[in-house]
Image (cartoon, rainbow, N blue to C red; front, top):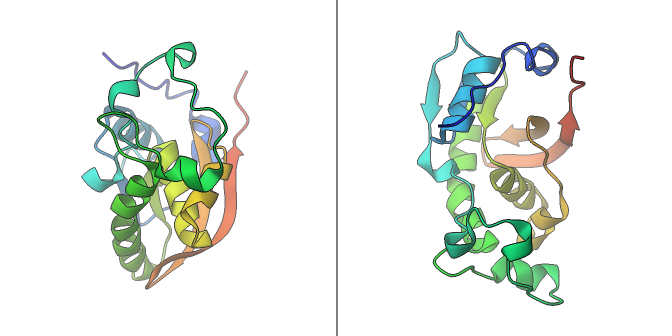
Length: 170
């Protein structure tokens, strides 16, 4: 069973976020729970296209049990597919239409749209903005961090900030 988010621990993040017009999440329990903790009075839309990258046979393996892929440039790495999974390029192709559709919806809200998603999906969004798939792999994305993109009718088009972490309460 997944651990619930401590509502007190998430207050600094919630206080740092704007009032949003809509909340969209990955269907993953951790994303839905995070959205509930951040915006308890908002309904959520769950979009299955926003699942994390499928790591196939490597999903859940400790770092020391992952195979050594050897030297690989970013373009080659973005196209590499783990056994039974999907490449980062595949993830980007899956996520791009969802990001564009949600951006179009956000244009009519008059308030920001919040997507509560996985690190790989955030990287895919940054890759969509840069227009270069493998560029998304260069960004670190911490748990409970904030990435803001400016969006228009054609989807996200500029990066405002990536991986902002809010101070933790002591």
